[in-house]
Image (cartoon, rainbow, N blue to C red):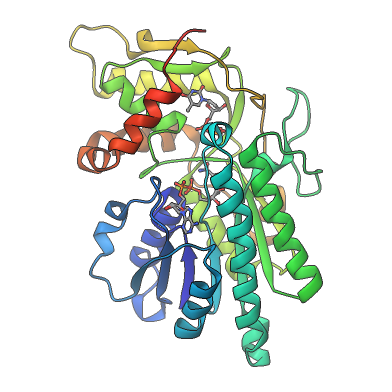
Length: 360
Ligand code: NAD
Ligand code: TYD
C-alpha cells in the first residue's frame, strides 16, 4: 500500500485516478490509502469513478493530526507516502495565511514525525525501500526577470507569498528529516499545473467557466506575468518516475517548457472556445477580458529548468500547451456536473470577496 495525502484535490485526485485506472495491471498495483481533510478544495466527486475499487480506500483525516497519522501507519503499513495535501491558492494565502502555516508547515512536520516513528521500526530491507515523496512548487524560488535563466534545483529559495513561504518551510523540513534522521525523502518542485478537476479559483478553469457563463475574465495588472504550464497528467507521470527511480535526498524540478504570459493564456482559451463553442451573437469571448487590480507582491516570472529529471530519470512532458489546453477546455465543457458540484457556497463567497472591485 501507498499513502497519498490530498488525494481529493486537483493534482492528488488526478494522481490517484491514474494510479488506480492506469496501464499497470491491477494485480501489480499497490493499493492507495487516500488521506484528505476535504477542505473547500477537496472533492469526492473527483474520485467517483473509483468509488467501488477495492484498491482505493478513502480516509477523511487531517495530516496535522499526528496521533491519527500514527494510527494509520500502524494499521496500513505503507511502503511510501506521497504528500500532496496543502493549502494551494496564493490569493487565499494573502487574505488569510493562518491555514497555510497550519497545513503546509505544521501538517508536514506532524506527518514527517509520524512517518519517522513508523519508518524507524521497519526491518532494514523495508527501511531502505521506503520513500517519502514531498510534492512542492517552483514558487519557492521567488521571481525571475525576463532574461534570467530558468530555476534550477540549485537556485536559492526566495519565496515571496505566504503560500510560497509555507511551501519553502515544508521543503526545508523534509530536507532536514533526510539529513538528520536519514528518512528516504524525495522532493519535487513543479510549475503551474492545469487540466481536469482543477478548482475554478485558479486562472485557467476560472476563465473557461467565466467565459461560457458570460462573465468577465479577470486579468491581474498588465497580464504580462509569465508562468510555466504543465498538463497535470504529465506531472503525475513525473511523480511516479521520481518515486520509482529518484535518489533519496534529491530534489527534482518538473516543468512543461511552456512559458506563457497570463494574457496569452487567456486569449488562447478564448480562441479555442470561439472555435468549438462560438457565441450566438458572433462576438469573441476575448471581449470579456477585463484588467483588474494586481495581486500584492505578484511574482513577475516563473520558469523551470527540467533538464535534471530528463537527464537522470528519463522523464519529459508529453503534452504541449496547445494540446493540453485544448483537452482542458473540452473537459470543462463535457463535465458540467462536476463543476456544479464544486461551485458551492464557499466558492461563491470567495469569488465575491476576491473580485468585488474589478477595476484596473
Ligand atoms: P488543491 O488545493 O487542489 O488540493 C489540496 C488537497 O489537500 C485538497 O483535497 C484538500 O482537501 C487537501 N488538504 C488540505 N489541507 C489538508 C490537511 N490538513 N490534511 C489533509 N488534507 C488536506 O491543491 P493541488 O493544486 O492539487 O496541489 C497539490 C500539491 O501540489 C500541493 O502541495 C501544491 O503545493 C503542489 N503544487 C501545486 C501546483 C499547481 O499548479 N496546482 C504546482 C506545483 C505544486
Ligand atoms: P493562479 O492560477 O492563481 O496560480 P499561481 O498564482 O500559483 O501562479 O494564477 C496564475 C497566474 O494568473 C498568476 O500570475 C496570477 C494570474 N491570475 C489572474 O491574472 N487573474 C485571476 O483571476 C487569477 C486567479 C490569477
